[in-house]
Amino acid sequence: MSAEQPGRRLDVGNVDVRLGGVQILRGVTFDVRPGEVFGIVGPNGAGKTTILNVVDGIVRPTAGTVRYGDVDLCRVRPHRMRDHGIGRSLQSTHYFRDLTALQLVALGELPNSVVGALRFGGHRARRAKAAARDRSAEALRELGLERYAHRPLGELSSAVQKLVDIARAVVVGSELLLLDEPTSGVSGRERGAIGEALHRLRELGRTIVLIDHDPGFVTANCDRLMAMNFGEVLHVGLPDEVMNSDVVKRSYLGEAAEGGAGP
Ligand SMILES: Nc1ncnc2c1ncn2[C@@H]1O[C@H](COP(=O)(O)OP(=O)(O)OP(=O)(O)O)[C@@H](O)[C@H]1O
Image (cartoon, rainbow, N blue to C red):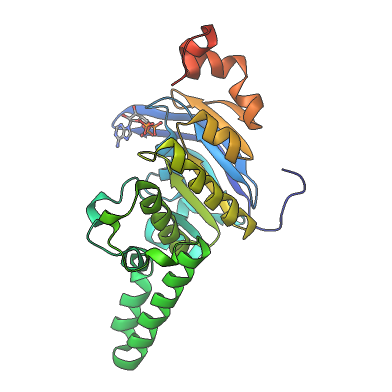
């Protein structure tokens, strides 16, 4: 990407994580610039999801720093990340198949609706609920999904279900979106729709950190990539540079480095 957009930068510095006596992350350092799509790649168990868990406060680092602009995210509780503009997609929407697209997106507004009802009751609670509904409909529109608003998720294609959940993440966090495998379970043909949505979100000034296993998808849709293995960063840089670096080919692509198939 060229000149940096205005906005907040995510800075992860020297993060270690130990869980159950096992070292999961070691010295992980990277930054995500405002308005960029930043991809994290690596084999199963490399520590990718743990990084998203550290950023949104579900896992606390045993050492290191995580800052978003001037906010120390290590001091923010997970349910307060929304106050700092941070939203996250679900790995699967399977348990919500009976909800309509609009209802799933509105789950992102639930804390505001519930707080409104408990605090104010009656008329103001109804207003808070209507505002939540409007905001959810707007997030669906932002991703061109308004025609699915009243359809149950279970009737929609995997790609559209993923996009609806990304719209829910947008409702939760308006600035920084953490997307865990947005193309998993989505056919190659439909992945283009996910890529287009990422570009649209970026045009609207949102910053995206995503994990994905599809080298073609991340190369086509990310501004920069970070490759990991065994809880450590192997390489951060432009997609082609990372995917073609010797250390990544050896550690991540495995056989591909010797002329075989990739993951
Ligand atoms: N709560 C936990 N307690 C102990 N070990 C854990 C815990 N959570 C994750 N791990 C281990 O940490 C390592 C990294 O897991 P993580 O889910 O971050 O990897 P990943 O790169 O996202 O993998 P995948 O691509 O399969 O989702 C794995 O070996 C995993 O078994």
